Image 1 (cartoon, rainbow, N blue to C red):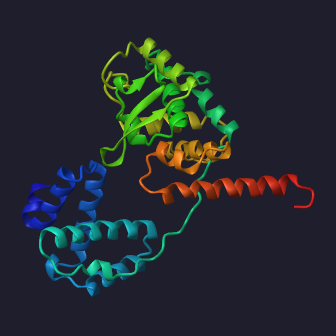
Image 2 (image 1 turned 135 degrees about the horizontal axis):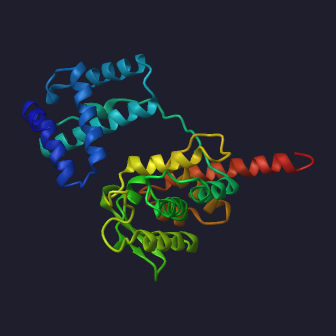
Image 3 (image 1 turned 180 degrees about the horizontal axis):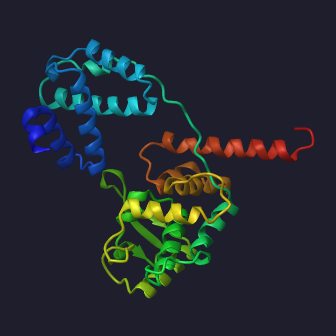
Length: 298
């Protein structure tokens, strides 16, 4: 990164601003760095001399390559934030990216597991024979991971970052640092707390990272993802699922049972209510399907 910053000092300064002042995650920094570099590959005009037409050409090039709308919007989100920084900090008078109309993103409803599928998945670690080389406590750890995912609706990165001290058995809650390092407290259900306690006792985990690998180091997000993939093969669930699908299922099942939208927004750590509202569409679709399946005159 230092070499790239010396070639492009404005981009380097912007990324430092994101890291230090905006407390951006490594993932966000990587995405924004790559977005600026991708534009630079196509257009070498100095940043302060770029016009709206430069960005229109780039937009058309991305669309011509049939890039997903979500990818295009991510690229331009980075460029917009960058130009917002140039206007605020570098006395740029006009933001050329603001003049563009971006393609609307396709609204896909989140895929949600049924309660029966969740039960089957959560039971899998104790049913499946463990790898011989794996510690005896590993199935208990895997149960605790999946129970906590579904119980609290955490993001994958949030769960991987948890320390033992973040779980409070007395208040039945977990302290989480979400996007932008925003702290929130999430309630944890009794089955998840029980699973965590059983795993910790068996693995002798009393401080430091909550979820550890066989080398007793913190599990990576990739390792946690692979845990889920491994047990999925031993269920009747016909679709490929990610840890985020457990978060989708948590939110939808909460709304199904009458939770209000604001509470679910707070539990998920969404900055905007509109992000949470996608789950109300899922719930409405499920109600319509239940009506169509059950009502004699549907």
